[in-house]
Length: 370
Image (cartoon, rainbow, N blue to C red; front, side, top):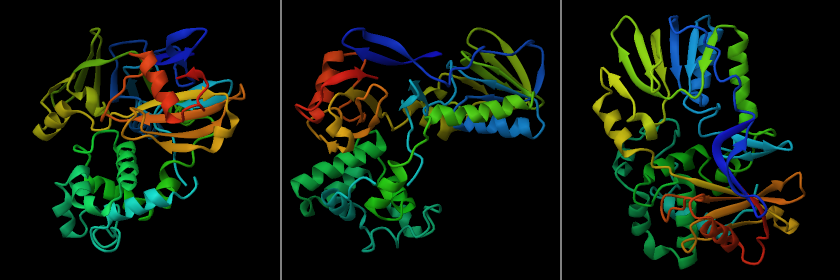
């Protein structure tokens, strides 16, 4: 099935909206009556929502899952073509690429706020403020930290450091939290190689959607899951005894409880009664810091299979790697951009093609983009 999300381009067919995905659910709903009172309504069918719906249904509750898109997975989903998964969002799940001495050196300077590369200030990665002094870093942006160590960085170190930080945040150097990066660093074992192991090595053979669909199927097998896709919600009202959810097309659903996994970027499009806490409302007005852009390219050069590169700051696509061989025998290149020097790939195709070709001039004989 083809999702409305995503775009594809070939020289022969041009730019087309929508890509195939095994995460598309058909039929789009199994709701037979709008009068049912559910034990729980789960809003959102990303991993959080799927996990909540699965766990609630397996526990014996009657659950309604509502999702605005035509598919499951949220920001982690794949487009599967000929058995090959193009990861359209979140990709890697854990555990290299060759050790890059330049970037490793720059990262060491970046995180070494305590003389121990973060080990003293954050000895327990899953307890960020276990050491009270860590709170002093909470107001620092990545830019603040780079400015503090600027005299110790060579121009090349600074370029690869900024490119890697932007890859991780998907935002800008000024809105990326230094403490959050240090948190990532600690979880990855306080080393650059650990970052590669955890963040960009292992992925699901069949793609993210092949994993996410298992959650949905397990919940559906209980016969206690109702669902409705293509159902963006307009409002949520909680009167204490029950919750009423109204979709944008006017349908009403009721349940004893509601689990909301609506992404921060669209949370402020939903009316809540009683209203959300002030902090959450303020955050929803700001939206996600991470505005990562992902462009997949199939190229004919097989020698690029093990290539990786950073093209910062001159290119809108900052970082790219060779990530496999497609069924057509092409090399799969996946490239990333951030909110800093933002690119919207489908809006200016010539600009996007130039950005991909600039990743490795003379090597990018593009056969297909996604």
